[in-house]
Image (cartoon, rainbow, N blue to C red; front, side, top):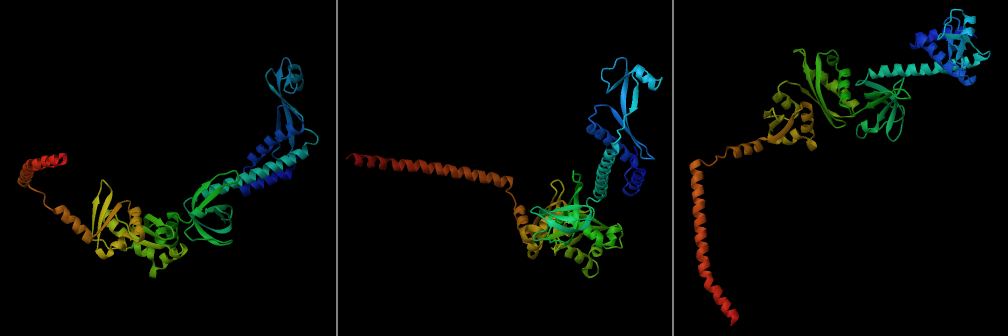
Amino acid sequence: MVMNAEFIEALSQLEKEKGISKEVLIEAIEAALISGYKRNFHSAQNVRVDIDRDSGQVRVFARKTVVDEVLDPRLEISLDAATEINPGYQLGDIVEIEVTPADFGRIAAQTAKQVVTQRIREAERSIIYEQFVDREEDIVTGVVQRADNRHYYVDLGRVEALLPHSETMPGERFKHNDRVKAFITKVEKSTKGPQVFLSRTHPGLLKRLFELEVPEIYDGIVEIRSVAREAGFRSKIAVSSRDEQVDPVGACVGHRGMRVQTVVNELRGEKIDIVRYSEEPVEFVSNALSPSKVVNVDIEEEEKVARVVVPDHQLSLAIGKEGQNARLAAKLTGWKIDIKSESEAAETAEDEETPLPSDEASEAAAEAVEDAAGTVEKAEDTLEETEAPDAEHHTVEEKE
């Protein structure tokens, strides 16, 4: 039975276009045809299906073991019957006898179509998965198709990605056909194909947006060393330069602030502080508290604490609204930051500088306490002696 020579050519074309091996497809069709043969012809035989790789001819062979005594003719064949087919057969050999049904062509065609369609779908899913798994932690632009109570569904071309409402910025809403930039946080395999998850709140989105806007970052001259973000409100990024002639902060800000403004606009007005990174914790912490000025920074290495002193009039600026500036600076630097004003720091220093009593003063104080205690005891004894008669007098009066 000939399936179709053109079908074999079509498999070759699929191999070129989709990257699906023709040999893998043919083997999958052969395996599916075995199940189809047994199901449609109620056969319990061991069979093998062979598809000619050039002509497309399909043949079905029953496989039987050569034995002395046949107990199951569907699976076994006697030695005498086997040697009639080929004198070289011996006990234990496998004899293949063609049992191709006359109307097997229809079953073969339907099965082949189903297998090829399924394999193409699986291959495309695998290709899409490989394409997007390599783009994890990258930025993409898509079109919002629809939304439900949990997600926005964003068309990325070959796949529909999920943007959870929890991963959008405060007050951010999207409508059908809105274009949106988002950060790929995760790519997973599923029975329905690859699932791509997006975020608009991830710090990585801020980093990738600057890479798109600042050529020096893309070229590796300027490096983003750390990012701290409270999406929709304020962010801080620390940058450094591999070239002494290139100012990393200026490169990110751009001429008249055009570069950073483009990022701010994409993030719906989120404020962004760009600070210079330093290997020295004192300098880095000072920079991170921008726009506040810093008077002094004391570092406690073991506890990973930075104690910062700022001018009195800039204390609220250093701390920020609801502690936001200090909190972001701590995230950016990795240090716990304790902020005090100059007057608070001075008061603390005075308390610490108050002299403690000397040994002689301590002894004198102790003696004074002892003397005072003795005086109290004598006073108590005198009081008891003077009060006793009165007590007796009151008792007599009560009896009278």
